[in-house]
Length: 292
Image 1 (tube, one colour):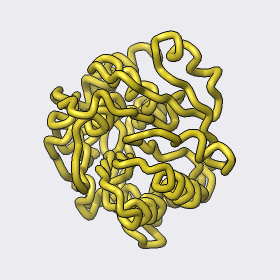
Image 2 (cartoon, helix red, strand yellow):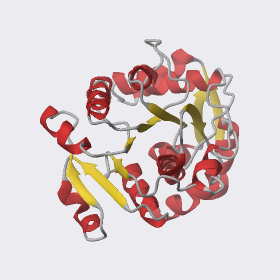
Image 3 (cartoon, helix red, strand yellow):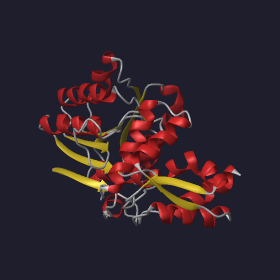
Image 4 (cartoon, helix red, strand yellow):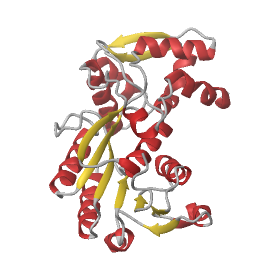
């Protein structure tokens, strides 16, 4: 599982949550020539002391692209957080990666990536996948499902109110720990060959009813799942003051969950990381305890 450990491996977004864990995993698995790329190299200066080469890479600064990817064999392209701009950012990065002579791209995508304009974040990921495929390079596209940790954004409010709001007809989500996705990406960088697309999921599909039960167990307070229509869910988010673009993204995600796009369980985490994926409750338990 470490066939390419002596190749030059570059991780973008290396100062971010996922990228940093991926670099740590590469170190732990014996990679000998790691490049950590980030907009602010000062944030990962400690990695340089451990033998990692640190390079500046700013997706909004074209002058940094060619120098960052020079001499690299394989790239982990971590999708940026610039929603609305990252399609353009990623396309420029893929072009620079191809020009640098890189052999393989590993990309962190999303489930059900497609061009539908009402599909939330999916279109940007879809067009990035298209750009990668059109490059002619070998690739491993990892469609990371919803991070388990994202539930923390609303957990306190949900527990306090005792109500978990979600769309009617929810068919569940295979929540996956961010660390599991990072280790999976590192494993793919070390071993994947050819051209492939894989969903990266947790160990089980969790419905809104299941999630409410998890939050109830962890908090010791009753939490009930409350199914809503699309209009009711959208109206509630708007009334709560959420920005319109965020409302569209969240509604699109839940709509996809009612269509079964997130109700998928795969062995991708185990195959590339060598570990079993963490269950949702195991991820949330220490995080909720530390937030009290």
